[in-house]
Image (tube, rainbow, N blue to C red; front, top):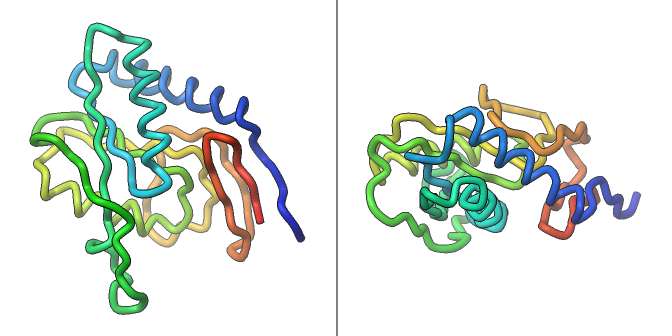
Length: 169
């Protein structure tokens, strides 16, 4: 079938800018927020969102972290555990609003693992989910709060999302 581009770099930039403004609007600013990207695909996006949020409200620093959920997955016995990268969360998440960021939402299992992993770093007042692409096919009752693009796909297709664009293989 080949490679098909569904979002260009400009489309991605516009989607992230829109998501950042939606986050600010929903939370009435950025005070008390922390952005946590899921390793690996969500980390670049979390970095971009944190920068956009800081530009919207420069008076408040938006803490940025990354989370590896390898050891919290529910399919540990079905496939080998290969940690994607280290978790980097500075300080406690107690009382913060966490914007959990991933590039592509598919079955929801990675997000479920992330919610469990977050418990090791405190008890947030709320967790909101931002994704660049929601491709459906959910196996768990998980729904994103902020979406760049809803993209119907078949289960067999592979969606690759980067700052340079989104492609389907």
